[in-house]
Image (tube, rainbow, N blue to C red; front, side, top):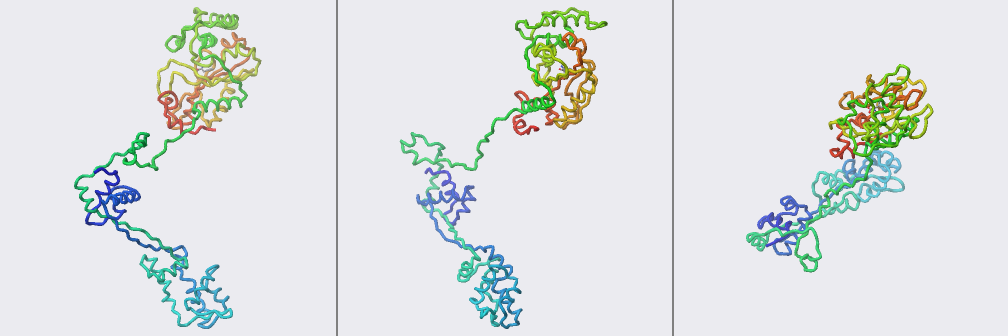
Length: 499
Ligand code: PHE
């Protein structure tokens, strides 16, 4: 015989000799009581089990009932107060009530039950307690006390307590299940669980099969798939915040090509053409035609600086300078190429001091991937052009900038760049590991950089790593958690971006 799974379980758990309640069957079959009840009714209809029903009553004290069980019934308290106040004689009602500690609606309750239960009578505003009354023999009080102890109580008193709203009665139907002879036979012959289906098909409807199959139950407690809205990546959000901060500090934004001529990326920066960073090892060279659109006079100035240096006693690199090499295109390894374009006047025309510019843009380096290095990352480039700038101005600008992100412990270390003098590396303390990590590079542009561009005053400049700023802000220690194919999605979803 084939039966739905829930019925098979119940049938196996039932006995021909012992009655089993629904609760016991539910426990034995590890099914919900309502599932078992449904199965039991179906099995009864099949004649496989018999069910006897009995009702069981339970009585529960209401809040008021609990209160009177503890403090005494109001009429009893009134009776005792009347005895105390008048030594057995009739006493003015107000006096008794004042002494009785009964309050509000309890006074009415006490008065209406007082006479009914023979505790005395009320006559022209006076309360006369009956000397023969015995509050210790109060049936209702005794019933309340018994119920509180979980004992059962006689019907009439119970009706009375119920009419006073001191108890509520509940009725439960207890079903006891036993196997019938047919049930025993069926089990002996073998009962198997019918196949369950989780989908109603048009074919099942036309064939009528739907009447015989068992449908899998809905699991209304199953977790629904979590719906998540889209969200800006924290790196992008932080980049936007950096832009806001720098704009607030009076900076204008630079834009420019990711693939650029080596001229802008390196030559303008007085980087010798045989510098190791300019070899194919570090650079992503692109196999595209060279850049035509570079001002001729600028090329001449830069070539001259490389060959002869600038100023009276300037000195150059004493090595050949190739214009073809300068025009060749590569992915920019830093965004200082943008600073060169703007400082030269090539982007927005000649600039008069003071000027402040920034960009938050991607750069590309042929590095080895590790927890702190990616092949591409974001640089926060910036520069200030003004008369008479000092290192103090540079440091002050960083302190102001980083304080907007809650970072106050910035350290500076002297450094060397071919294009700045003096130069400083910036370090910040990682909030989790406590290590000092490099967060940027900066300096005052050299004459060899500025004069060929036609800039006569001072320019201080920097390139800061956006990802490192993120590490200091959120405590990440592996850049690959936030960037690229190995990123930690939960971390990205859960990290709240600093406002
Ligand atoms: N270009 C430098 C780097 O990528 C940063 C920098 C910019 C340093 C401008 C000094 C001046 O590390």
